Amino acid sequence: MNSSAQFLNPSEAARRLGVSTKALRLYEQRGLIAPVRTEAGWRTYGPVQMARAGEIAALRQLGLSLAQIARVLKGDRQALEPALTAHQAVLQRQLHHLAGTIEKVSAMRTNIAAGRTPDTAELVQLIRPAPKIEVSFDLPWPWGGEQFALSDIRTLNYIIGPLGSGKTKLALAIAKALPNAEFIGLDRSADGVAETHPVLKQRVDGIVAWLVEDGATASQALTALLVAMETSAAAMLVIDMVEQGLDQATQEALSAYLKRRGPDAKPLFLMTRSSVILDLAAVGGDETIIFCPANHSPPICVAPYTGAPGYEAVATCLASPDVRARTEGVIAWRPQRRSDHLAGVHDASRIK
Image (tube, rainbow, N blue to C red; front, side, top):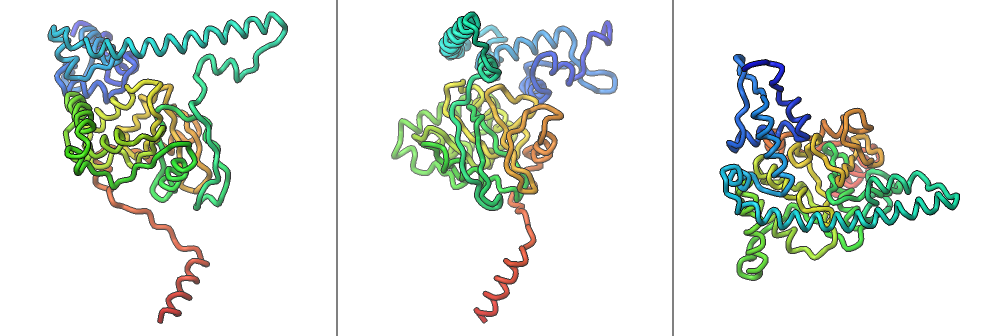
């Protein structure tokens, strides 16, 4: 090591690369990068490792799986073709959107020349696209009927909350209020798909193969989730505990796959408590976090940065797959209200 100043710890290396420290560990696990170890055994990243990590991050942005990246880095250029085809389609959609934005800017300049100043909302929408859809509805119990307006629906929307916060009820209410939406519960199954839907089976098998290349483990839980998603003709999906039955590597691959679908993909509402599915350090511009507080205050949208209202509470709700596995099946217990207790006593005496 010529100079320790040239070497960065994982947090600083991830910050400069614009990726998460989890991503760096995943690159290392797949043999794509080998950080330098200090005498104390700590990982550090020098110029060579940073250059390689930058290449990997760029190829990930093109939509390549980690297995495809490994082949590209070994000189197999054929692995680039499908990714470049998909990336070209994304760029064409972005070009269409950019043309529309240029028209809006031109119209604003014309209005300014005519003496009309655009308001703040119009200017903000030049930077961030308008939500795909807005919806409002009366919140179910335990909130007591307050009105809830969801005006920041994005391609990926996470529903988060501690045990007993009512997030499942919120998810069901959102599915009911949204036009042409479907709730996918935990009773997911892939039984009979091969016999009755061979085309669907082929499509799902293709997605599973891609995910496995990216480090996922093929399983009934993964196949059942994908079958439910691919079978639905709904315009939007609300999915209960998307991580159910999936190990950490599979969650990482699935999360990357869902993020790669592009801005025109079907909006998803993912109920989760996994820090892999919702990596707060990697939330993109087309993702929204909806948080249900423990005290049954109305749900709020939380910005993904430290210090934002609700951010710390969201972080405490998330856990790694290992921790989630240990607490699976745990339910929240809430003391009965006195009126409920008395009603129960009355019913019990009547039964007697």
